Image: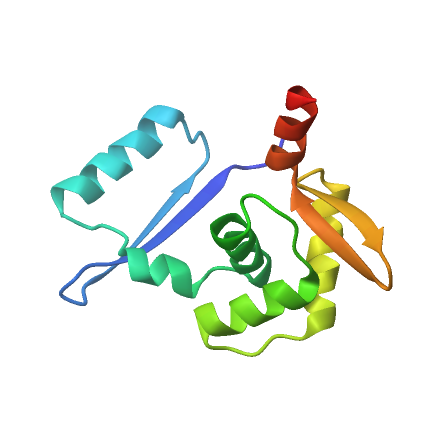
Length: 132
């Protein structure tokens, strides 16, 4: 059996750094005690820090979810919204790859329309099927 190990690195609002390492018989109760200790010390993860570490795939999904919860869209639509929303460049091929992966995972429906692919969130596709 492999040895369990959990490492938690934190920084508080005053710049204090905390490193906690749990090894061996790590139980749910022990981890909850660590979180209770963090709560007592008022160490909380700030929301803006979470968005900095978002992956490109998560950012693309956020764009899909925010701007296209209903209706169809293309990878070019996502590219435009991505650059507006995050103020950073991304290649169209990267967006197309992620949308293809979302299709494989069943998160979006992908259909060929002329020379390009159009996408629609599966939530909307399922609602349309129940209406018909």
